[in-house]
Length: 277
Image 1 (cartoon, rainbow, N blue to C red):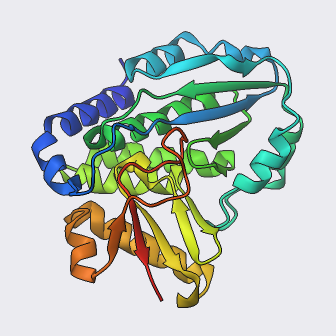
Image 2 (cartoon, rainbow, N blue to C red):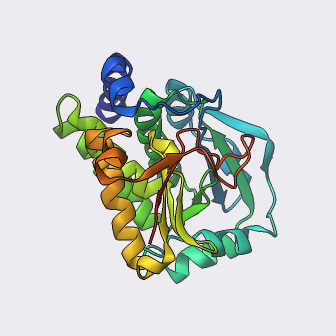
């Protein structure tokens, strides 16, 4: 087992062992829901070899209890991918994708889906870090485009690799419970989509993939960039101080009301924090 995989597995063990802390940090008094978040990773490739990952990569997928979805993966182009990636590109990080990334989507010849196990709240960051490691190895094995289906977000290959390297570095250099905060923030930037413009709010989607509520910011508070800054600030605070403590201290509402049904991958079982005008 190579050093990177061992470090990530060690991190996964740390998160599992810190259940008491996680329950205190992520606990909430809302009505509990049996729904558990799940990563759905979409990979595009040049040919059908995408559907048969190398042995080392298959071992990484198995090590973290992920699985290849053989029902929807296909050795042919999906005509919907150009539009799907078009609405999913991350428009927050500067130059998050390039024309070469767009051409890779347009010219793909195969589609592979990889699924995480349903994630317990205290293990979401560990599984999301594993998802980033799988993304990195898939790109190294020849994947030409990558999208996180659970929140509808896509980055170019260079940005995915940057996020994966940052996450691995965080796993190796941080100690104890600070791993949760450092890795969780990187995974949130990788797998969450923000802002999505609704009628009243600019919204995030995908924070449940790191065990946090999503955050809705009233449009009247400023631009979408202002909303992103506030979303990240509140999410960082919740990761450090707790889901209950942060909204309480800031006099914000945390509720289960949302537009996504429980069967939707975008459904957030940890609720929504709404920041009004």
